[in-house]
Image 1: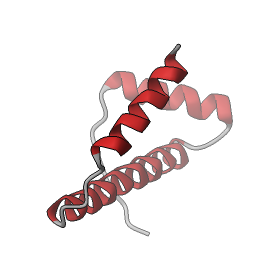
Image 2: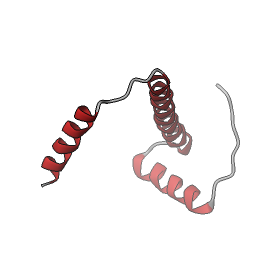
Image 3: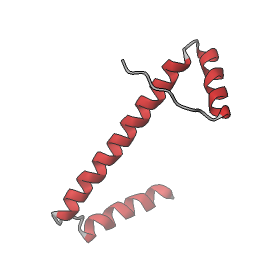
Length: 79
């Protein structure tokens, strides 16, 4: 396992310490858990963007009818 050192703003360090105390978890556990979730979300987003760019480069766009159908569905749900 790797060790990493970082500087935290006081308000983040305080929040982390309070959360660790409230949950009975270590600050390290909570930090790793938060970092794991962040990295997974960012990796997913980058993957989706890259896939969308490939589709766009291939000319794979929604038709005007498909866009209209989805817009109408969203408008109907907003009412």
